[in-house]
Image (cartoon, rainbow, N blue to C red; front, side, top):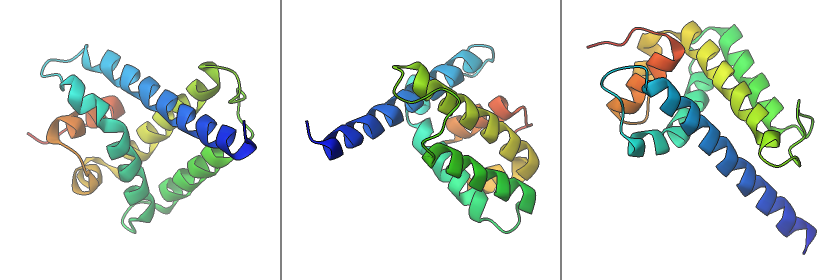
Length: 140
């Protein structure tokens, strides 16, 4: 197999693995609370979270320290050096998903509920799931 094709397949597998781990974490969190989001909302959540993190990093009202940590997160995800190497099946991308979950919680707590609600690109149920995961109060 061509080297470039293997790289593309690895990247796609990594993104799918990251997405599935994020959905699993959110599904487990949703089970603890009434008014859960539907499975479809959770499946659509990963692209919405990625857009939210990009918007938070670009928003000048978000504290500079939070934006710096979001850039550090991006560098970590792009970097070939990981806590667990990506070539290890399943576990290789799990560390990336956990780092993103921790960074999301940090960024959303420091940006605040108002910024998250203003910049959220997805559904209201997805927003509630992200706010609950971050431990932030949501508006009614």
